Image (cartoon, rainbow, N blue to C red; front, side, top):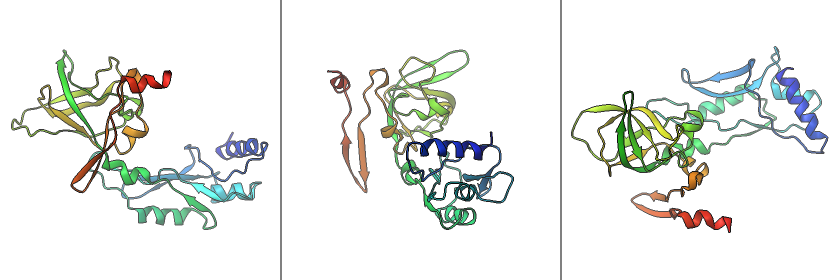
Length: 250
């Protein structure tokens, strides 16, 4: 079944319940138009085509869904997770949308990541190091419950020491948490100086991930949240303890 046929089938199922479908989320399949801006950076994928120049949403509107009003393009612009990428600007995205989307549709984008993604950092302490025949490890007090992206879908976050190291000796380390399972890592094969217990690291580009995706997995309390504005800061969420976690079980 084609992508268009599957989408129409879903719309029909919703209409059985009297629901007015006002958004579509296109399947990322063969045949989707991929709009590229600034070299190899993909801005968004939208408007699946059925070997025709007709726009995807336009086809749906003409083929039994005349009340289709909105196109939700999802997260829109990304962020620079490496510190080296050159990303498209909002004006590039607007220009691309105007070229591909019929003007009668109302466009929805969710730009939160591009606004706050680079603004957040998780601060952690080194609680130990270890080495085996194949790997060297830095063990921190942060874990996969604090930043789930690396273990869930290999998300990359820059990791940098907060102390100045005079020695130029660098090594390759896996940065891991204290939960004893293979998925508990924040970064693999990272070039770092030799670190000692008590030193601190910053896990960068965490945005709101450490808040929205954090959990109490393994009975770990969520981290304190601190808001920094200009030269001042304030606590906006206190660190959770065991009593906080079990209070909901009473």
